[in-house]
Image 1: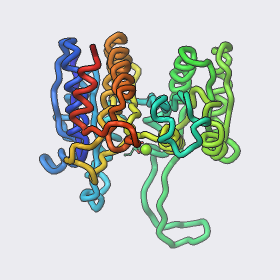
Image 2: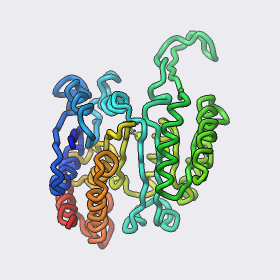
Image 3: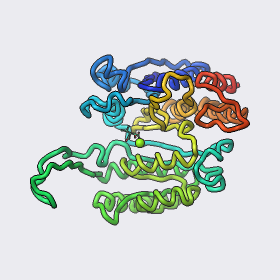
Image 4: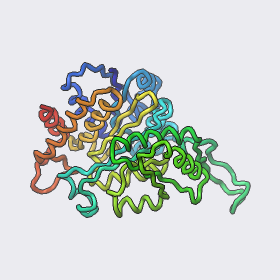
Length: 356
Ligand code: IPM
Ligand code: MG
């Protein structure tokens, strides 16, 4: 088992260190190698995804990823911005299946901005397609408009596109995931307006026939965004394209009130995966030792489960996280009166201890 550890920027280094600590204690004998990525890689090598980092990613079974980005890189040309590292890794490794669970932990029900009864016990899975859609579609660019409302004006344009096989493969992952859960898939699109979405829906309807044991429902993206805050527990697995998934997964994460708790996994068809917390690099609190490492620790658990066939070790980590929450330990992002405030390192140490 070879793991590439890419801590990245901001709080990335602190939270990744805690996840690595937990993995080492498990004693599974995995080989871990570190590489620079994002702004840190740009500063050192002039590129957010240097050749050596990409090569390490390609030759590893899994990537444990922290976070990338900092305001100081906002003015760089797009190709040099930290985000390009994550987009590049997704593209080069073909990480098309993005699992973004939104789970509301019992002790954190009150952290949500929604009423506790709406989110208590919430457990949904956003399945986002990650290598297609308007994110990667060509052509794209800036040019002078030759038609439309303002011919001669400067215009920006992107291309939304999906091929049928791309839709089928993410659809299959969603149906298979639903089989291990509550057997309900909501496919989200905008087929009342977009051709790409009509193909998406037609393909999902076809594919759904192969999974008669799973209930398939279709929803427009605008309605899904609304239903997600109206009655989130109605959902089980939500499958959608790259851009809609980007938006819905941020929305879903907030239902739980604690984005610092949510892991994610991005897999290719060889089960190689990139594992990262759902939150960003939070440069405002970087280096202060207050970031919540639990999302990254839970991402390491997902890594053990999905890429490394170590379900038992994954269970142990997840149980340990529940235990530290039950003990009342809280980083500032999830702190409430009556609980015990701890820092990044103390939280990591507590998880190690709770592994048993
Ligand atoms: C995410 C992020 C990325 C995305 C950015 C950083 C490119 O928002 O992983 O959701 O849009 O996919
Ligand atoms: Mg996003």
